[in-house]
Amino acid sequence: MALFNGASLRPSSWKFTRSLRFRLTLSYVVFFAILLSSLGILFRQALVTLLDRQTRALLEEEWAAVNGYLRIERRRQHYWYYDPTDLEEAAIVERLRRYFLLADTEGAVMEASSGYRVLGVDKPEEIRAAIRSQKEEWKIRYDSNDEPYLVRAGILHDDRRRQYFMAIALPLTENHRTIEAFTLNYSVLLPAMILASSLLGWFLAGRALRPLNQVSRTAQRISGSSLDVRMAPRGAGDELDRLIEAFNHMMERLTAAFEQVRQFSTDVSHELRTPLTAIRGQLEVAVFTAKTPEQYREAVLNALEDVERLSQIVKALLLLSRSESGQLALQKIAVDLSPLVQDVVDQFQIPAEAARLQLTAELPRECPIQADRIQIERLVSNLLSNAVKYTPAGGRVCVRLSPEDGQARLEVEDTGLGIPASDLPHIFDRFYRVQSADLSPERGLGLGLSFVAWIAKAHGGTVGVTSEPGRGSCFTVRLPVGNPEAPAPEAAAGPA
Ligand code: ADP
Image (cartoon, rainbow, N blue to C red; front, side, top):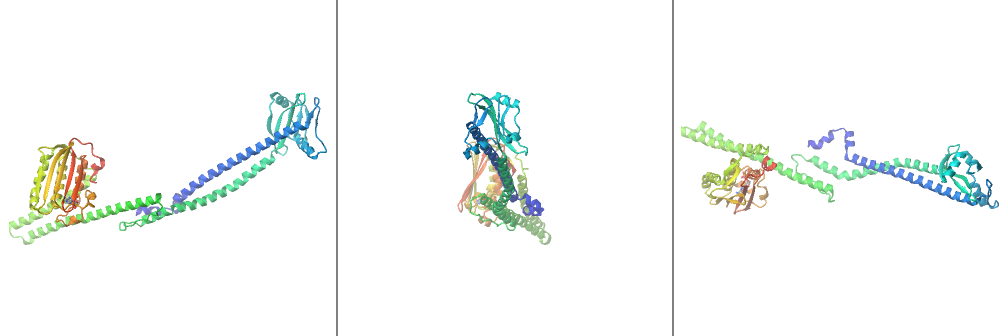
């Protein structure tokens, strides 16, 4: 619970800037701002290029028009050839002469309009250099008001192929104004667009995260006593639905684990209470009722038996915690399984007879393997104890051992209660007990088989079971004969 509530303890400003909604919106806005600014710069550049190209094209047109209207007949003798009564022609020529310079090869000015003079007449040496280079020139000049002009200068030929220097110009003021207007409008529009995009981003992020908030609110409702909380999938089949599904699965596993632990505590207290009550009874008999030394002795012996059961339970719990914490290291040595299994079977003959069961063993002459003797004894003993415990009187229990493909195969078969198919996948889980088997007079802790599975796995082996309710069960353990590879870490860490 603390995990879920921890965030609400922090200051709200911290929470706001850390919130997913804020961060999503911020990245969206930053992306949008970069995109819009880049687009603005790009458009502006495109506009500059377009206007520049248009002005150059216009100047080229005017240059060609000058060639049509200007006549230079003799050296340094020129005139404009047009019909002054044609108003249109007159206007064209007037426009052409507005920013106009004509000079000879020495740099002597033949005609310079007042407009061009304001821009600054080219010096003779500049003119001579231009004629020498034979190239057209484009340059920017400024008038007295600092207004820019585009100047096109180059060589002109008369009808005798003599060369002259000519320059014409056009004002760039209009172009610059257009670009400035675009820049200004865009800079005003940009913040407005960013603001609009942040509002949109905030709204969209809020909508996208709404189901997530619902998930978190539901998670906050969960506590040890309300583990049955589940979230209804939205049916969108998206990431959030998968999250909800994973959450529900997690809750199911958590509930099962909680239930196991709860059950375990009940079982442990129950298991401990029974022998404790019995010990108390025996001791009371010894103190208050017993008269003869035999009666004392019997009461104390009975008490001792219960103390033994108590110590068995405590030992199992200790073993569990040691194997869980990985402290239970295997001591592998060369072991002959045949006599080992025979010994365990012999130990169970008396309880089997008491339960009116027929206990038999089919063992080879020898079956050497590398193993931890004590753990393997525990494994066989757990399987046999279950077989005896869960087989009603008149039944049979048979232990078989045989070598098989570089492995030792141990089978413990009984004609007992059997295990329902629905319980089979869980019987190796810790604390798992089949409900119907609880009616058996000897209740276990549900740890025996998890130890069996852990011991088999830690030796690099396996354990499996086939069972039919009402007919019996058969547990099969396979252990590698040679030195098995190092057990997997989780096997060494304890029963799964
Ligand atoms: P327990 O201490 O309860 O016997 P185990 O881990 O040894 O715990 O066994 C888990 C459960 O598997 C038992 O509660 C029992 O219901 C079932 N089980 C184990 N062995 C047998 C068997 N030979 N026949 C029938 N049921 C069995």
